[in-house]
Image 1 (cartoon, rainbow, N blue to C red):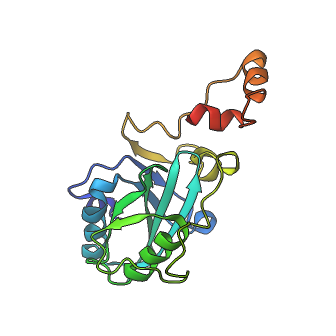
Image 2 (tube, rainbow, N blue to C red):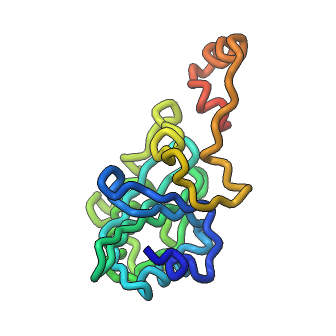
Length: 195
């Protein structure tokens, strides 16, 4: 896979080499919302087409995964963007891949993500007067990204030093674990760490 073409002009947060048979892609590129449109344009120029956009409500925010497959080669690549719960906004890539229109509207429906620049971000599957996002999770039900998408041993190709979401958590002392378990709100230690 020619990653240079896919990464041209962007600074990825992290690049992970994946096992195609286990993960469904050869590579996952974590990028910021600011570089998403450039990364998507790179995919188009490199001969990839958009297969799907999927959103997951994780502890650190909404993980939006853009799945691409190459037209002529047996290569699949994921772009992944993480947006915060309190401001879930990411640029639309529908001007680059028209098929993103439907997928972005679906994520807007179910998670309340704002795809800025989308030409018609209206309800797709849910009633137009519905004012909630039904797939948003409660804090206690959210799982950390490092548990959902653990990079394999020696699989990180590159990583920005400020991108720390996949750093190992420090070991808790028994007293810290007991104090966290007794929080007044009943939140898990992971959700307390987020706040």
